[in-house]
Image 1: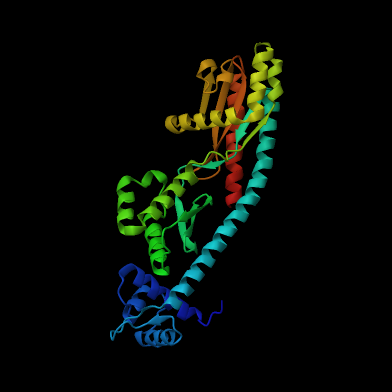
Image 2 (image 1 turned 180 degrees about the vertical axis):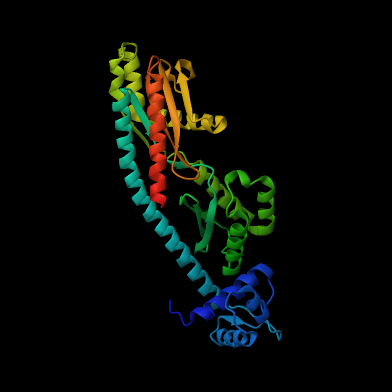
Length: 348
């Protein structure tokens, strides 16, 4: 798409569109001078507005001094908004892929070192985002019957969702929904999005309240998604070193739990719920206290590590009830600190 606007005209057009979307009233030069950082005189702004009108980006609905966006103006705004957000989303994804690959390699090594140091079995979950905030929401039309919702959270976690609509939305209505969602949701955690806020959003969205509901569901899914929880293990066969765990049936069940990972995902999820409630650094589960049935003859010691605000994972040691608890706790505390230090170094 060609661009016949210089930076100053683009800024003035953006101010006109944003003000009009918020107020529904034609926008004059005085409003633009107050709303922008251009430091231009009203006369200069009027000249620029005249050029924008001549180019077809804004129109004068009646004889007042105010202008409103034309279809061409909306199209320019939408295309640039989508391009900007798409670039941000693409950058986030590339950065996260690179970080994930480095993280996977490091966590596998951490599990191996932990198993070797303790001579028990080690398990570690990849970091996930908890209690993080909405960064921005972008709605864009795919066709007359579908809208793409992109939700980006603080941890650069991206969730895409296709929302089906009965009727196509105009550019103006789509932009109004984007502004409504971002104005009200940016910086909020899922716990901040209460019933009162949801009701107000739906009322403001009018006939498009179903779209608001789909976006909120997408935000909830982004935060609560446990399907992608990655688990790394090491030292599963160390359990054979302990007579009380080397019974063929017990050993088979424990090895099976390490191989299929489902029980370990459940274990990590249960442990994270308990730790969120107790706010304790290290948890010890002995025998029947274990959330997983196959580990009733074991002791499980876990710790939560953090890689920045709201980004957490769990480290666990599984061994006999007569494990060396002090040694295990010392190892876990040391690893917690090392992982936290690595995160700080990457942020600087």
